Length: 123
Image (cartoon, rainbow, N blue to C red; front, side, top):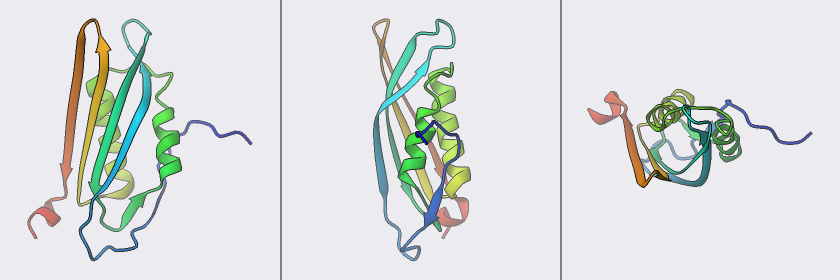
């Protein structure tokens, strides 16, 4: 069966949960639609996180990001949703999602959203 877009983010057990370390994904081919015009919007997402007990499985991340391709959404909403969905899936110690949106009408948009687990931050 052919691969299809999916909103399901899968995870696997962190092989080194006793150690703080950073994982970074660079996702330069993100596409969604402008909710006002229906024209495509393109972005480069950089996702950086310190895992706790779970890590994001890469193929599921690829299919998840692909699932936005035919959805209309404002840049701010998409960037925040990606953070919310990833935090729900793996409950990291720390996560940043940076969306660098390509030029539209002479303007580029950069959006950064962050999450810090309060228990880890206070440790």
